[in-house]
Length: 138
Image (cartoon, rainbow, N blue to C red; front, side, top):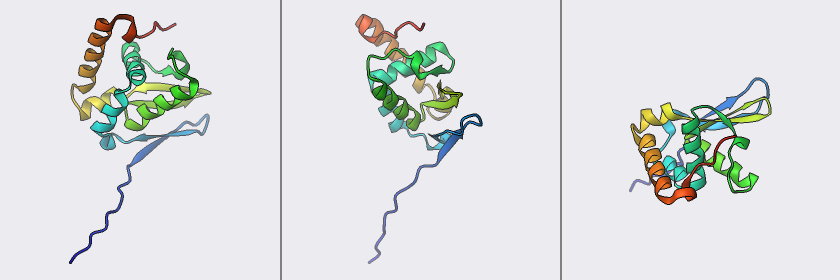
């Protein structure tokens, strides 16, 4: 009888560190981004709203530029889930934490997925009216 011991697999994580702050944030390497993690991250309406706005603005945004109807700690949680799933990249620039969509990584791994999900979210927002709309950036 052969006994096989399961060893938990560790995810490879890239750590982004800025020279000005020395603070580092873990991100999954492209090859370690998993479909189920991405879908889970985008299944929450607040996280989907964040991704829709990042996609629409096509630039990095600070966390404070998002007008979400949740507490600051909940907002932080949502950004962490998106970062750990590989949907966004967060880097510190001075004291600001900048957020950018990892569109190239997601498109490389799951061609058409992000655009399909964003188009479906836009159709849903149109169908539901104000409930699903992204607040205007100011």
